[in-house]
Amino acid sequence: MAFQRSSQSSNFAGFFLIAMVCAVLMFTDARTRFLEPVRLGLGALATPIQFTADIPARLGTLIDLWLQSEESVRAAYNQVVDENARLRFRLQRMQSLEMENRDLRRILSAPQRGDTRMLVGELMGVSLDPYRQNILVNRGAVDGLFVGQSVFDPEGLLGQVSEVMPVTSAVTLITDPGHALPVQISRNGLRAIALGTGKPDRLRIVYLTPNDDIRTGDRLVTSGLGGRFPAGYPVARVTEVVEDAGEPFLNVSATPIARIAHNKHVLLVWHGAGTSRRNEGSR
Amino acid sequence: MAWIALSFVVALVLDTVSLGPVLQPYNPPWTLLVLIYWCWIVPSRVGMFTGFCVGVMLDTLGGGVLGVHALGAAFIGYLAHLLRPVFSTASLSQQAVVVWGLVLVYRAVVGWIQGLFGPTSLGMTYWLSTLVVLFAWPIIYTLIKELLPIKRRV
Image 1 (cartoon, helix red, strand yellow):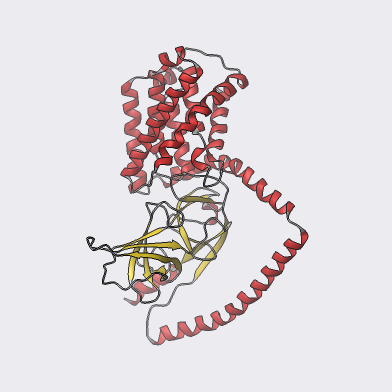
Image 2: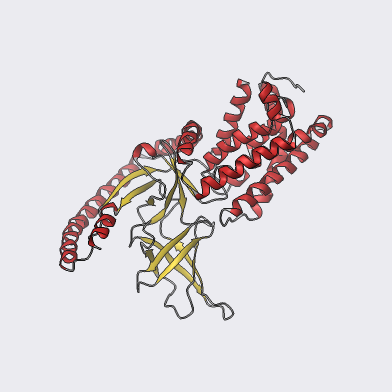
């Protein structure tokens, strides 16, 4: 109690000490990975809080499900079966194309593409920081997630894992103001960088000059530069290209293709572990 | 002590509950309000060190850089102790205004530090949503006072 009494009383020296500890924490956490085990431990403490806070959202979905009529459920079921059949047919073609691609790459002695593995996760109805664009998913260290892992929804790239807790993970969306993503225009391969803006429906494409060939409606895909995201996955569609005569760069806006607000399920993707190893071998 | 810990856990849960993208900014900073309350009621037990601890939890729950909310909450613990004389003479509505000021300071500190670690997008709602504290403080004050069997100590 004596310790507590002295540490709680309002002397400036004590506050200064705590502030120093905080500063050290912040810089260690932001610049190094030493604190990952600490974060994991704190995450274990936070997990019950997150699951409790998720209860209202979970009840909401349950009640929603309960109120749905049998016909609408049947219709939705039929639609899903239908879509599944169509997707499986496309997969058959995909497999033969994949084989063909592998053979062609071998003939060209180009590095093989790595296999991707994925895990389906569910969004939790939990608010992280309302002023950042991030979400919580119900997969964590026990599922083998890692910081920097790519996260997709069925339509496109969603973001990357930014914090791994034991059974949950925080995902920073590509629309977070602190997020930058190397992209490519699928039409002509022009590379660019997509920055988050903090608004869920807007990305900023930076460092494109008026000479560059970019138009409204262009589809942006991941370029795979930097090695963090797999290449070639849909990211956004260009909505606006503004040329300001006084500015050296174009002012380009895009809307993410992933529908963050509509999909409850996300895909956590492992990619290219094999590719990089084979790459190094071939050099 | 257990009651205090429990109140912090409940506050952390309330801070984490999702209200949807539109209402979310107007969810009052429950943990911070509970911290200020205890700083005033039992200053010998709750203060900047407690602030640091719950701040670390806020950082973990928020998925941001560790230490940001910790520093903010510790600073609020420190300030709440300095402002204790003001609290003991103020009416509930006057207290609410002081608490609102503290929350503004907290937002300023946290926003500024987050800005050091990367771009942020803190618009008008970041500041205006603090006004909800004016309504939340009387509620939380009465709730804790009526529900928890802890009397004021100095």
